[in-house]
Length: 269
Image (cartoon, rainbow, N blue to C red; front, side, top):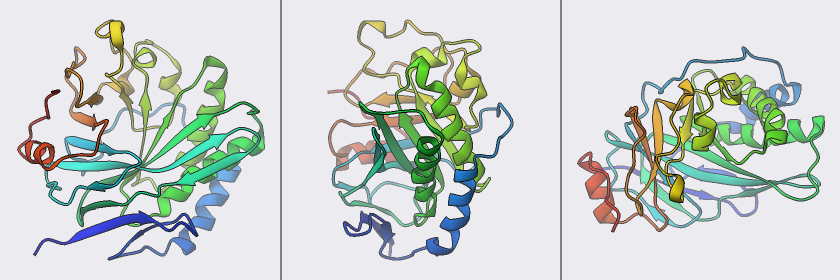
């Protein structure tokens, strides 16, 4: 009999829980939090890495009910929105409220979406608290990696660089740390991505409009993966990546999951 997990948030605590297994997060989180607050420095650059257990296809699962129980863990994994973090006069975390049901052995990545709002100031406290909010998702049950999704102006790059360094220092080396990236960032030959302590930067090759095909991938962190959308023609960069992240603007369907289980990418309608 196939075993499944039901991942959902407790509205009272904002903690993701599995009905089958919970890690002893209370024992782990204080140590991780202390490292995030400390902000120890790391080597400036890490070579791009696709985690050994990571499947070739990863599905993004955003804030909506999702039933992915028929997805084959041998073929695909899930990067689910775990929380949204809003930065204005403070750090405000909104955990996932919609349930997501997945196979028990699925490769799972917890995604934090960060948005900067009016009133934001780049301070030491803001950096430490933002990193701590991200690090907390490392204590969720059965998580293989963390992913950060954000937009950054040139003036905000130093802030995000420091936050990512704190997160990397505070999480186990065995846990992957990835980020999404604008294709324009990946086109910089020696840009700011080169200094970030992440395993991968996933270039978002969708919603590009007239600019599709304009950017060439020059940053090494961007060559191992690509982000595509099911509602657009799937345009790969010139260098074919090893791993594909798929976004769907609507809940994943049984038909789409069936195609993915055959190592096929769903086509735009």
